[in-house]
Amino acid sequence: MVIDQQSKKIQCGYCQAENNISPFASVVTCEFCGTPNELLTGKTFQNHHMLSVYFSGSELTELIPQYLSKFVGVPSDFADKAIFKEFELRMMPFWVFNFHGYTEYHGIGKFCTPVHSGHWNRTINTGNRPERGSIDLDQTCLIFGYKEQYKEIRDEKIPVGSKDAFDINAVNREGGRIYDTEIGYEEAYSFAEAQVKNRHNQLIYREIHKVDGIRQDIQMKEVSYLHVPFYRVGYSYGNWDGEALVDAARGKVLRAEYPVSRAHRFWGLFAVLFAAAIIVGAIILIISLPTWQIAGYVAAAIFGGLLIFGLKETFTKKKVAAE
Ligand SMILES: [Zn+2]
Image 1 (cartoon, protein in one colour):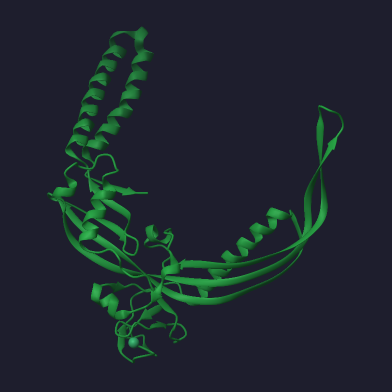
Image 2 (image 1 turned 180 degrees about the vertical axis):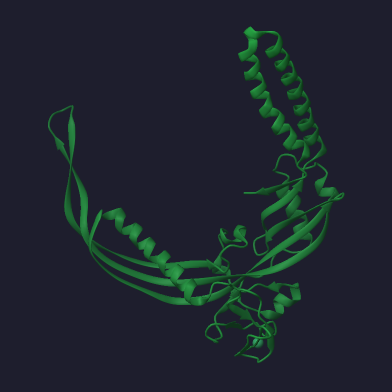
């Protein structure tokens, strides 16, 4: 691999084709052969996988209105009137690590002995005693390739069991764009290893409360660079525009924007007028009947809340549905 920092281009270590380096990327997946090149070390990764695209086009135009139908305030004719305009397939980067971890530990654990001192009362003695044990665990860790961006994707449970070998032709056929990780291999490895150690610690402290000695052997069995397909879908409803994000491997909508229906806005406006009338009444009460002042202030405060709620519902044009 040859990196030319000046022109922000690299030559693929496998097929020698020239690729652009996108800002912040620590890996560049060759757009011609699909081989990932690591910028820091100049190495290429052999273990590159993807989840295949099972949902696209017309399926997305059904999935999104279906998902939105559960949310309050979505126009009832949204499914009929929404026009789907943009389908952008993004192949998002993950690191997948398989670890085998073995920990032997010894320390102090608690134990309980019930003491029978009569028919009706019973006391429980807790004591400490030395304990030892071991943990033997296979574990898969998934590290999302971005630190700050695309948060809605990072928290997804990705079914890594169904992964296929990465196929650049399949991605191109679907018109997918490849996004590369900003977290390099070394950094991802240390995140994953920390996850494994944490898990072992949790299990140890479930058994004992003080650790006196520990012997740990954590080995990485396999690592893979994984691309998972997501669709960004753009749509309009009258002159309103919005977008949604869909997991294209499982057909799951992660988030979808929607316009607030006219009926919902009407009720918002109704709340505004109703609250305004009561507040005016309360002000008159405060001024003209001093003995009723406190009741007037309380009413004004309560209906002030309703007024703000109503204003929000009346003038919000866009909401986001996400679970
Ligand atoms: Zn290449």
